Image (cartoon, rainbow, N blue to C red; front, side):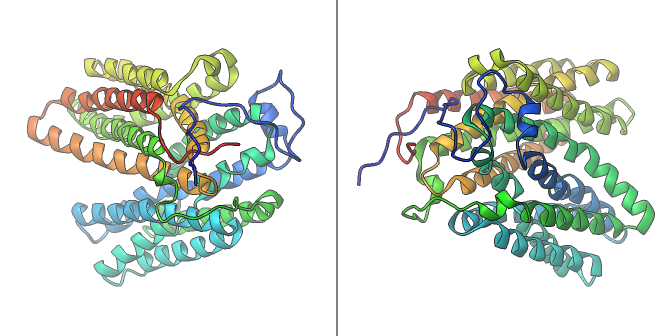
Length: 416
């Protein structure tokens, strides 16, 4: 059977989907996306359900630190992260083959059981198992939402929907820790775990009962054990996302080291919040100005993303550093938007949801690796600048991988 040639790693236009919102070539604004039937609901519900990604790591640390060492607390966070890395592609593959609601119900049940096992505080092995289950069962909202956009919107608004989703997703990482600390204050150390599970369950109910979610079906296709990973250029794109994740993860640790060296550990939270605010701003600007989208390709945007990290090497006074951290976050939503459009084009038929889940896993794995390398380098050298050096180097490598993918013919893409 001949394999269709893959699409380039740049956005492409598709015919408007049947039954979608009426096409308006002059309006690709965020408001146009949100006004389309059901789009605001699925976006809000998915954000509510994804709150544990911003809340659970801190909730696990606060809960574990009551009776455990910091190393053991970190083990629980690692088990949760590893669980999500494995669970998201697996659950998304199930959704691709069947329907979304049954997978979401199964996932949230497993995750809730995991949070309950941790809260029971039986012993360490049970807590680690619970953290792994909580992560592995986290419903795959990102991938389920992103395959819906082409059903809910005309093609010329899909890219705006991706950017809007990525930009407002930053609120998860801004509000998640706040929700955790408030819940702990009200209900004690286990309160953060309960809040994460509650938000996740509420988001699942709201999302899975939406008409568009209930109607969605995966595309019929010949199945392959490798799923979307059999597409060569898609693998290159995932490799670039690993390196992008490493850049982001390394800065998280480097910012903490910078704050400690400045004598104010609390500055770390403000610095990371500034970066998230910059990403939110960058996403809204990318939605607002069509010229940015018309001239953006993945290699160009990754190059801008890499350049945005270079000023952090100056490690200036904290006030200036806040502005530089915001600057470093500006290009991330545009980068991820173009990557998601490319993933949608490159994924073989019937594997789109799983492809989006692999993108999230690639970014998470890269982030964990970048954080680990930055922490090790800071411990060995004691130089804060060294921690910030990883980000531009990793992002530059991602730019190289994106250039390879843009010019390399491959296999496994799909045609429409």
